[in-house]
Length: 278
Image (cartoon, rainbow, N blue to C red; front, top):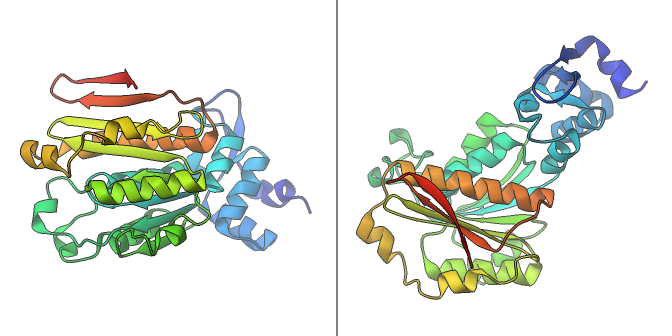
């Protein structure tokens, strides 16, 4: 029996968002499809989207993404290196957007000073490793996502494993040494790299891929540790706003959207976003 025929009693006709009518299926229907097809929940969602049947959890993405693009995200794997102020929200946003696999890396544990801005930090998570907390949060939000938590820093010894089968690397780092290590490994593996940094009310994001060339060298050349962040602070709003820019760039990379050799600069004191060409 074809999948559409099997799912017919569970389908709901929708008229929006996007152009033209389509069908949606709820979580129970996706689980039924997975059992019928003898595959994972992610595999069942991909099969549904191939028939323009949208899992209800992704219906509001329709219009921004086509069914094929949503399925492509479900087949994608991102490495989130650092799960603090930037990496926490990017991890959650990527899971909600529909990525099927995440590798999450961070050696640090939550402290009380993280409570002002790190979305994954809660009073009951103080002392908990950030990568393990991110894994737990993703599983509560999107149980279909394959999550690998690595509660340690990126090193010369583990970087190859961290980037294995990865389609995009998202930077949530706060030190230059680790950033250069991960960037170099991503370049060698031919994996797009999404850079992000914050200082005070300013945030920066950039995508380096095969089309842009090694544009991050110019950005990192004059940096020394996290001195600007230490001087200007890390207020509540800046990391999450900057994480949104990083996610936009990651999605562009995963979907093969055209990218420009530019640095996005967010200034919340104005507020404005500028595109600074490199």
